[in-house]
Image (cartoon, rainbow, N blue to C red; front, top):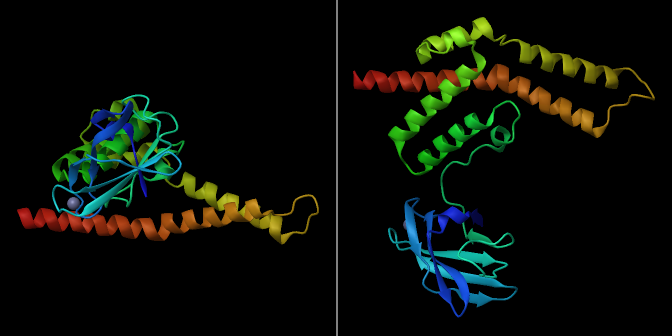
Length: 233
Ligand SMILES: [Zn+2]
């Protein structure tokens, strides 16, 4: 089950005094195309639920939609009403750690969501453009104003000058040391709780990712992009 939003319902119809979606825009869970499902018939089910089964106009696979807590008072989803598609469409989901993270401001988060959305719409060119824009947003938010008008590649080069890249790592190491002290030296007042050990383990994972996972991933992505550029020239 995957929840759909109000703006994926372009049209409603009125049927014996209640409103029902008459079309739903979504990626098809089967073929992944962005299509408009014409929901001609909504069958009533217990507990104010409505169910519609519609064939994908592209691959013809039947797809099931559920309308929960249906009241149908207006041509829009009410506050309790929820629309679901039976399976999650293929594609990327924006990472919750980025969406809810405090490290990025709202325009950057929106730029990130836009990039994920166009990727899911299989607009590869637009994805590359928006991802570049996102990267520019990231460097601009880290660099002082005098570097912000430089070309993106130069901005990336300037990053280690203005941003102490080792600082986050030192903070993590310090936190693990302090947490480790709590465990190593017996102290009735300060015993490591489940929360502390959980946080330490999370931090250790971050540290491992930072040192071992991230550099390899960056190297691989870098090589792949180099290869693609080589193929073109
Ligand atoms: Zn399909």
